[in-house]
Image (cartoon, rainbow, N blue to C red):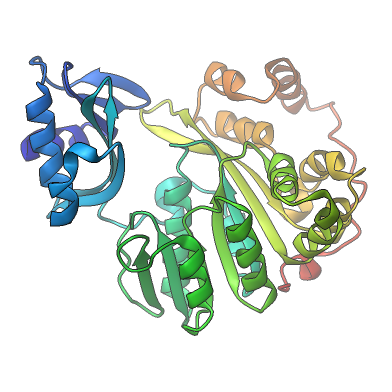
Length: 376
């Protein structure tokens, strides 16, 4: 089985699916492909699952497990984020591949603006996108950048721990939910007594976690976390909607004062094989802070992101897709299909390539770069 996993990783697999009554499959460059010809029995899948579960007590209670998360590794090959579930009464395993090497910004092809965003000393940075869009890799690259350049204490709360960071200039404490601390909420409440500079929260799942994360950002820490939202505007709206209507005005004010950036991403196929993250990046300017406070202006944020591309390094999905096409990384048709509005993307690409075309206006950008990247 380990040889099978090694072969899958060598072929660029991002996920491995092991299900009773089916062959073993791997997601390679976005598509599920069979790795074996023989279908597995429920007992075979159970046997594999038992080798992945780290705790003897959980192994003993395997037949009562309906959903179970853990991590597992092969020395010298890689680590996996593991989900064990039941489907049609039989066990199934989905394993997400986590590379051994911590990625950096260049490895992932991430925009240079992320280096400046990672240099914030306080506030909140959110990385958003659907499951499997590369959020964990982006956050790992940000932590890696800090670890190489700053002397800090970085605490991560993860379920499960994915990338294993080694102490470099920074000291990195990684806590596994369920093993090292009871829950995200209990871990977050305790972390403020652990002298952190940076707090990474695997996911902001509920009102209590969001509230505690906001408090941490307000007390001088840098908080990095994720949400399953598609873009910056939806992210802001989702956070506010979690709170009761009577609380929302104050949450808008608190969020506008704490948030430093929203990074939203989705993976697209590269010409040369593999995938690259297309990103919407919203560094928070004074104008955007005003829009977050005012519910009638939230929809203006998308235009401000587009208009701030040259001055602040912000970008919409479509702007980044245009850059990826013009740099020869992504095929035009692939980019067009991934765009927010394919017809508009087609038009903008034609305008971009027309030397007589004029770009969008540069209104609403009175705040300067020192205001943007000078901290909270």
